[in-house]
Length: 109
Image 1 (spheres, rainbow, N blue to C red):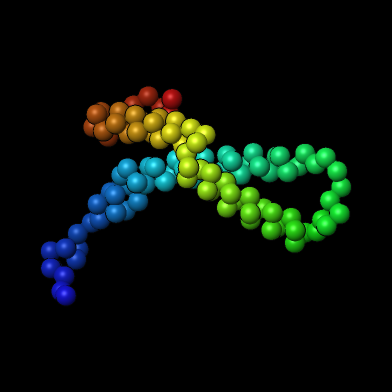
Image 2: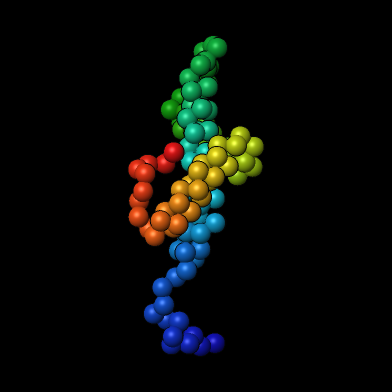
């Protein structure tokens, strides 16, 4: 199948370039995952006893498992962190678009 010449040099749409609703949602979920990873790392530091099988390899595996668990938990959106971040960013981008692209008011509120 051939591609029309007019579409070869066109710029990607915001949704295709990682923007739009999908990109904002993914960014919010990624931020929630980072927060959950930090929470899980803090919980791992609070040990109640000695780890008899402890080694650096075990620690690395636990960190990878915790990261995957945090990503899965963030994708479920049960904590509400991603929802709040997405809501604030959506309001901020709507405010910027309403003001003609000018960055009015400083940072995210």
